[in-house]
Image (tube, rainbow, N blue to C red; front, side, top):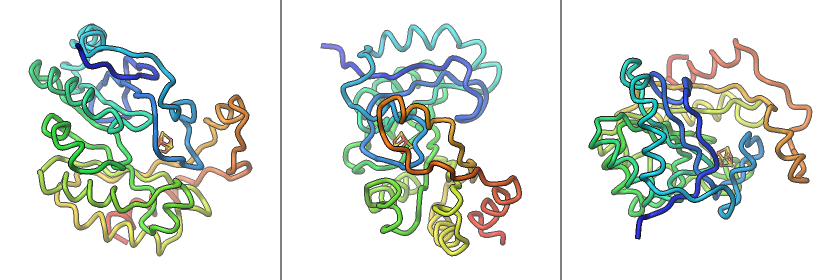
Length: 239
Ligand code: SF4
């Protein structure tokens, strides 16, 4: 029987999740509970709709010209795509056969043994480093960062290019000391090509309200461009 994946939604012309124009697949289900999550509606593992790899590839093929001419490809994000590692591995395998660039946008919260096959077919990892300090990581995501660190080190050992992403939330993830610690960890990874700092925004707040959930960051401001640039420099070890 064909493997199925539970998918929240698709985006045909993504331009922010990897190089070029990308077909973006938002997988359903996430084991993290980030207090700033802007995709709160992707958490429930039983939400979304089931698709076969063939069904997703039918969608992907419609945008091949745009992907190829722009140096783009497919990005699988979520939710947390490694929760459905078997399905995503199959999807990426099919993309590899068609020479389509594959990017995995992940928190890295996955046991290495479970994602080995998936990483065989992954051309780029967009890795969210949420917090370097475990206790604070638990406070903002509900889980430890131990698995994430192991995942990142494994990906680096495998030689898979990594783009680091860090959401900068004033008062939560922007202290100089914490950013330096994150920078020290990033330095251990040999394949980091880019460090992106994403400014926190409250555009996902309405999704929490729609689900009757309390949004803990009410009133927290977005960081300034200057603060974002400073954070990039610290994470890159240049300041
Ligand atoms: S990992 Fe992503 S989808 Fe999951 S809770 Fe955090 S921000 Fe939301």
